[in-house]
Image 1 (tube, one colour):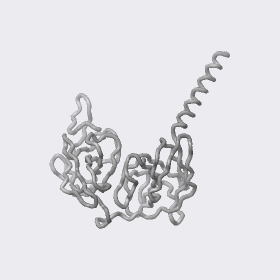
Image 2 (cartoon, rainbow, N blue to C red):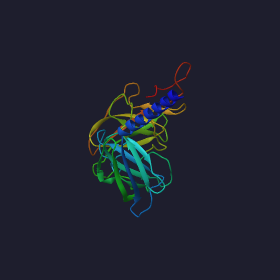
Image 3 (cartoon, one colour):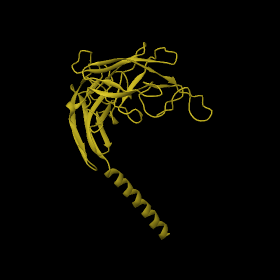
Image 4 (cartoon, rainbow, N blue to C red):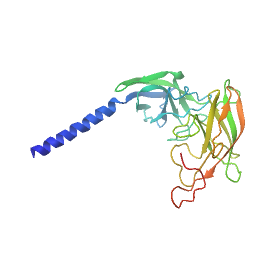
Length: 265
């Protein structure tokens, strides 16, 4: 009986040590986010962008894909447990939707903190307190200074336009992991506008959902260049057009699967 108690105690202590060790490898950012008029951003999302992975978020010019997404509580409070690093912080409360992870739409309440950097250290907590400042989002127009865009159309195997497609921009041709930028949904004519940060080379992938991992059966996926991805070169402040991305329906993978497209990445 004594031996069993000792073993249980040892197991408990090991679990506690593992928990403490895991917590020590992460840091925290906490706070309460409100609109400029004091309204809560409850039901929205906090977005954290690792400064080592890309440029500061700038929704008036482009939509950078966030590295971390944290739900906001009803009173506007949030707690983010994240790996150590330097982060930019932003938040969106959708005007007509809840639970969506997407670029801001007109009228959404947005807050992006003037590119302030937060240095998160292991085992430490950054307390923001109450932050007021979220305002309704005004979409950028083609006349915005410094706007850099990639434009084109997403089509299916028959060459017909694909409504609702999202186009993601990657820095590497293997296009695995998290993309850097994403477009708004393509219209009924399949046309998309992807805003990026200045001059660069980007590899493009089109999907029907704002998500990573393997596509679901029946969804579509495709890359610019199809079997051999081709880089799209941009110049700061200019539009690069004429891009056509062909997508195929994903019908599963593995033995016996009738898969019409490339394997998921």
